[in-house]
Image (tube, helix red, strand yellow):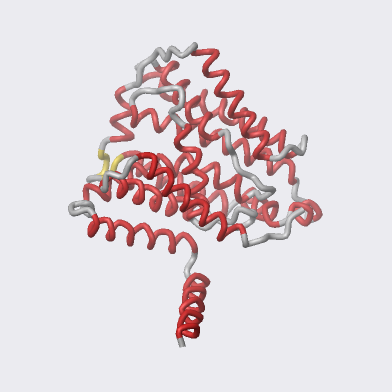
Amino acid sequence: MTALTNKDSRSTLKRIQSRLPPPLVALILAVLLFLIGGLLAPGFANVNQAVNIVRLAAFLGIIAAGQTLVIISGGEGIDLSVGALVTLGAILTYRITDGDEALILPALGVILLVGLLIGLLNGIGVALLRMPPLVITLGMAGVVTGLIYFVTRGQLIGDTPPAMGTLLSSALIGPIPGVVILWLLLGAGMWLLLERTQYGKQLFAVGINRTAARLSGVRVNLVVMLTYGLSGMLAAFGGFVLLGFTQTVFLNLGQPFLFPSIAAVVVGGTVLAGGKGSYWGTIAGALVLQVINSLLLALRVEEAFQLIILGVILLVLLTMYGRQRSVRQ
């Protein structure tokens, strides 16, 4: 009797999972965790806390945007240079502007171009040199970090324009901070890119099967290079945005976002084998991770155990999604 009940429960769970899109499942999970947090930590579940969670999740969500594209592209694609590029974007903005608000847009142009170029180098390594993505992006992370240390000599001289903090961290529409509005705009742009452009259609085709995509006329190498270029550009942009929140920089500013940027994509339902996923899922995944992080802080869990818990969550999800195999080249 018990075995039949367990079997029925598993069948019901599978039916629910098949009917609900992964982004919606992740969003429901975020809401449930938030409500559970109110029971475990009195005073946790309130409007101010909800706004703060969304604001903090926005920084992770923006940084994870490029990671979403890379993972959808398949080929075991994961961009390990994201953390270093976030740091680079923040440092370049910090030094170029040096507190001058008139230089914000020129600095943004520079960091987007630098991020794009570094990402394209990753893409060339993957597409043309046939290097494993983990190897080339890990190596690039080392190169970027080394260049940062060489140029700065450990001395980070500069200042953050006050307007960046005002626009990104302060409430612009009611209680909604500027960074959340920016995140929503990026979400709309990513949806258009993935669902309404030729590049988006080709990206999913490349992620499902690169050989079939090539035979269908898709310029696979170009799509892959462009994808890594966009990842680098979005990571550098994430550093620009993050600087508006922190108001200062340090040499490993972006490193703590590398691990969660991958986790947010996976939690949101993007398949690691490639060819299936969405940025809306990444948004929901970022919210789930931030709710968990905020709850652990509210419960005063030590930082070491916070990392352990987040690591276990990612391992479980990697195991689950690792069983979903796409046909690959």
